[in-house]
Amino acid sequence: MKKTVLITGTSTGLGRLTAKYFAEKGWNVAATMRSPEKETELNEISNIKVIKLDITEQETIVEALKEIVDVFGKIDVVVNNAGIGMYGALELMEDADIDRQYEVNVKGVINVIRNTLPYFREQKSGKFINISSVMGRSTALPLGSLYNMSKFALEGLTEGLFFELKPLNIDLHLVEPGGFESNFGENVKFSTSKVIGDYDIITARVSEQLKAAQRPGATSNPIAIVKVIYDLATNKRTAFRTVVGKEAKTVLLLRKLLPIKTFLNMLGKRFVR
Ligand SMILES: NC(=O)c1ccc[n+]([C@@H]2O[C@H](COP(=O)([O-])OP(=O)(O)OC[C@H]3O[C@@H](n4cnc5c(N)ncnc54)[C@H](OP(=O)(O)O)[C@@H]3O)[C@@H](O)[C@H]2O)c1
Image 1 (cartoon, protein in one colour):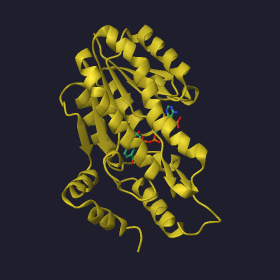
Image 2: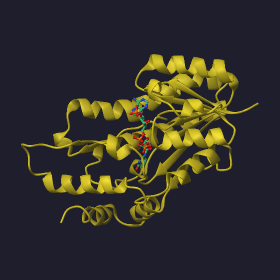
Image 3: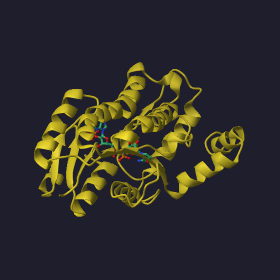
């Protein structure tokens, strides 16, 4: 029987590439997204079913899961990929943006996991692949405290779930990429202020850096990340955590080797002079 993967956030970026890759490899793919009515390409691929799913709206998750099981029979792997970035000085953030960062990157993943678990328990197997970031293990860019928080939370959530899911034959994995080309930079909400000027210099530098990191060829090739996800889904890789990208590996190595303040000061020098 063909295997089935559910991927969240397949309208752009990593989720979209992952959906296409799994489909090429012959998997049934539930390519979920917030606005399936806008999709024109993925629904032309025979083994991909485009389905509405907003990870912050429980009813869309419940409906999507029912539809996927109806169409494909079962779900073998869930890739929790959907995510957003709220950047900027914390003081300048709006309350709604702080809530949204948590609602999508943390509570959204919790929603998907909790609604999938009854299916995984019934079939006595399943796998969650959670897309974290190098920012889930270390700060790597200033003004990312909220995004950092959300990915650290995702790491804690995934680690903490290990004990209760292992006896049920349900696997968990974390993928921790460094920067890669996608719509992420465009979608990042960057808080600024016309009144408080104290964060202007660092804000301008980080904003520049974030945009530069998203330019073609500037960062790691997202296909390397897709392959890691596929290898985890097919048991070719079994590691709980996989760091992807040279830059991410260097940051985490330095973080491990250096005293934390030395590490932070060194990183900060790139942005604040
Ligand atoms: N790009 C990087 O440098 C980088 C580095 C490390 C980790 N990551 C992580 O990689 C993952 C994928 O990001 P990406 O770089 O591919 O960015 P992206 O191109 O912006 O894709 C993000 C996807 O998430 C979807 N999404 C946002 N809110 C959602 C919601 N409430 N429900 C369902 N889907 C929602 C977006 O859909 P809409 O089109 O509807 O908004 C989009 O399809 C994220 O978890 C991100 O944190 C990215």
